[in-house]
Amino acid sequence: MTVKQVIEKIIGRAGLPMRLENTCDVLVCGSSDMEVRGIVTSFMATAEVIRKAAEIGANMIITHEPTWFSAADDTGWLAADPVYLAKKALLEKTGIAVWRYHDHMHMRKPDEIYEGITAQLGWERYAWRADGRRSPAEPPEVQAPADFAESFRDYYDLPETTVRELAEDIKTKLEMSTVRIVGNPDMPCSRVGILVGGGSLGLGGEKTPARTMEKHGIHVMICGDVVEWTLPAYINDAAQLGLQRALIIAGHERTEEWGMKHMTGWLTELTSEGPAPGVPVAFISAKEPYCYPMSTG
Image (cartoon, rainbow, N blue to C red; front, side, top):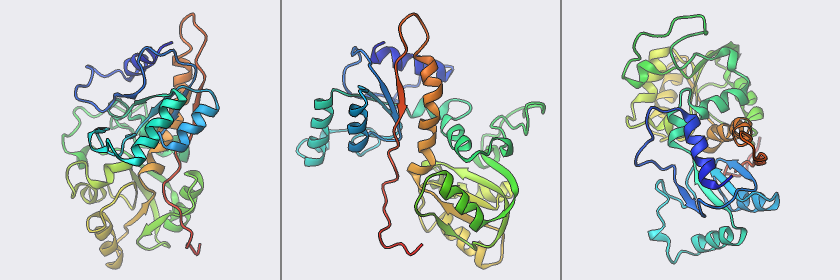
């Protein structure tokens, strides 16, 4: 199976009514005609992920986020940059092709990144469904509202706990060394929302995350990226005013990595279809980019 054939199978599985144009789902490096010996999925094709992929004999990495430090993977500004040149040399030496799977992944229904983190947290039975149903037996909404806050369904009704206990559970399940909290750690909570990756920046509207919490009565939002004077400030004031709101900041990488881990199951089946032998598929975590050497626990 070639790189191109793998890509076509994945995009076909996404099941969108039309192929997305002007997408960032592009072959970042390598040849589309190359025969694939093994595939690695990861949040990002970091230098360490590239090395580990080569060690297990994989020659294709499917990454969710950019390889070249900007949204469009533009390399024009990097021509003489030592980091770019060293990473490019590493990819050439290992002979690994890198393809980005982002836009089709998020546009698929249900969003595969949310499926991944829901599975990693073990919250499937608590989830509201993207089509507006609480369970398969309930009728779907007649028409989904156009407004993001109105149509948001990525929240979960958990057994009552505290923000502190919830954060500890998330820290363990998302394999984190440190979790940041805005608000009162001892606040009781049950309805929890998730805005993965850059979704917590508002998806084009910085007021959207706060409006979403208020609209759906969400006690705690788990989020990726933040701008501290928007949602964190809203939550901080809410907590200081005695309102039931808190924020758990897990980061972009830790909230989105699990969709790439979840992908290995169905990708193994997908690449095993047909008369040819299946292609080995493995997940390698890119790991969160932060370390906390001064943390006091």
